[in-house]
Image (tube, rainbow, N blue to C red; front, top):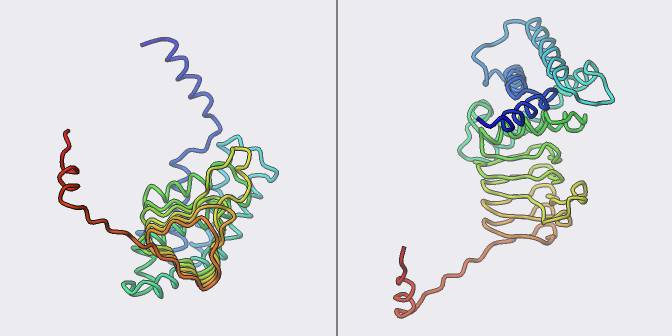
Length: 277
């Protein structure tokens, strides 16, 4: 093997010291979910003391993850862990509301236990809400690692920087993309394949608002694409399937895609069929 290639690989491996380990981060997220919702676990805690001990362990696990990195943060590892764990009650309450919203919006859902246990949309939202807190605490890498972990498992891609309100409902969900600067209000429902994305901007503008704002009580049906930081979908609007939207719509709007069917003449059909592979 080429010596220069070996040297390049060695240098690359040395440069990864201080980068968080995927297995540690993903294991921490799973343990956190197990603790919040027994639906994700093979075990149940038999006393409040056991739960307290588990939360203490999670704090130590998180500190250990931070210690294996070379993050340059203002807060100490201990303080970061305390701040993150202090948000767990808010995360738990938010996720309960999300599960309730899915039960209310999906006729197929029987109850919140079924949603928590089986719905990929709930899993993706759960990981997002954890990652969003870490993103706000300016923890590098880990928030994006978490939401990409959920993306791999569910096909739902939510950037941790997105702002998502209460009672968020994802129906089915596969193929949903929610960009970094997206703002979503309360009681919003998205179907599979929805993209809340950005129009092309220069790299220097990466921190400006590039993704749309979705106000309260909006429903966006499958495969709709809404692009641009200047775009706002007004409250109580309905965006139909396959809509391509790059401008704002007023509250209570209904926007639908109208497909066009072209019937070709016999001569055109024959020409179309003349192809070779």
